Image 1 (cartoon, rainbow, N blue to C red):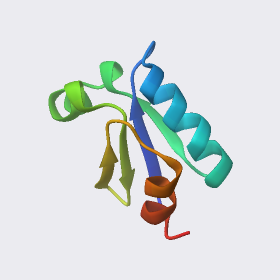
Image 2: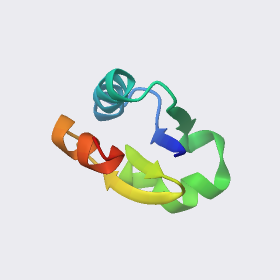
Image 3: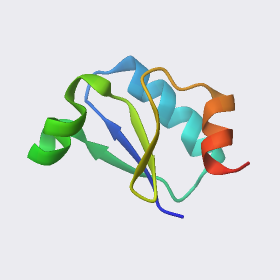
Image 4: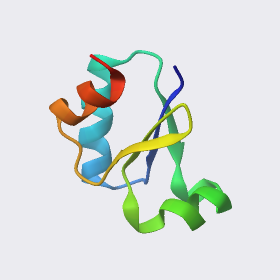
Length: 73
């Protein structure tokens, strides 16, 4: 399972989601929405965005229950 979190520098919702995700999934990759034109086009105002195997499974404020469900925990 490939887990990615699309974030933005200075985004408190992104930081909260990353902290939760780090506890639940050691293999998660963080991607900066502002560093990639395609990510920016797709997710600019939607961060944080959680993708599992390339599919959006959560966006905006992400709580622990949402993350566990998305990761199949």
